[in-house]
Length: 194
Image 1 (tube, rainbow, N blue to C red):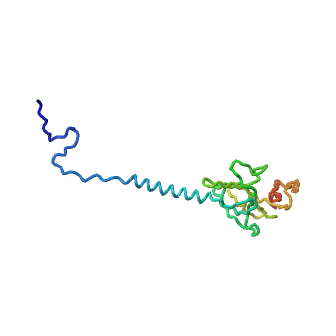
Image 2 (image 1 turned 45 degrees about the horizontal axis):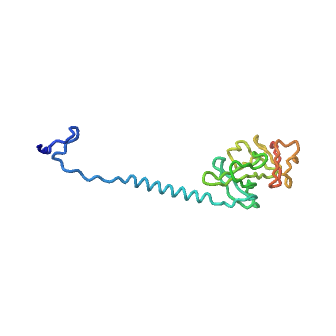
Image 3 (image 1 turned 60 degrees about the vertical axis):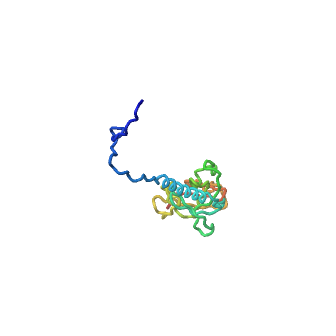
């Protein structure tokens, strides 16, 4: 018959620290890191969903609305303004169903606005120019607000507005660029400033 082994004073693992003669340690605290991470993630998810719902609301922008665009192409902002107060610099020509849809026959003649990640708003925009005013189109892809300049400036381009026709041939051969917009029944003739 075998006799049971007597308990040893030394731990079974010779490399483990000895607990002989030491009081028991404090109880282990439960980590709250998971709770904190889950709470932060929950708040961020709630903010993202709320923002998405807010930004995807139908803005009510429609064909013919007048907009005042500001900013750069990368950070474009717009405000709907009354057409008669002279503050608008673009008119909505078409509300697109996707970013791949084209604005017109010559897509480059139109500016486009895309609402971004959380918005499905895609607009085709016709620029609005003042007859006889000169504009600086250098860096036009950077500044969306059609900056006016003195007509004597080297970068000045003078615009002649021809209402009641979208036939750009009314500009004649003296215009360097001629654009006609059937949506607003307006043509623009561009010549160097004087």
